[in-house]
Length: 165
Image (cartoon, rainbow, N blue to C red; front, side):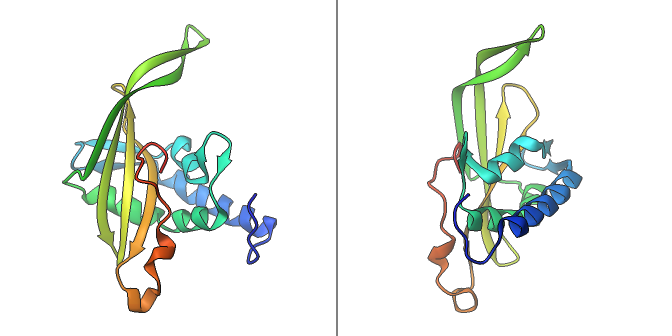
């Protein structure tokens, strides 16, 4: 785990557990643009913690994203316009008669951007094949009040890659 002078391991784990309990209560949110419910499953929460397989995000990035979950829900619930879209063919692990197999499936990423309570955020929703759209990530771009919040560049922690962010 990356070093963070302000938090002990125990404090971090308590904050993460509290965020996960709150996250599990969301279950799903109706998205006007998709005209479907966006499911908040364990994959989305895991992606808040890990950038890619076994590569953890910095603790401060995780904590910021935990705090933005309410704003992500609000953005999804009010999104009538899509700002970003990417469609790729990706390897997906699935079960076929009880056996894990890798299949190539269309994977779509939908990017919704909005300002919620002074925060400009991006929410990414992922859909594999014809499955349910799932919450994939919330990206804290920056705050909109530089005087109040100081140097907004400290919040830029994304690469522009919908799959990774």
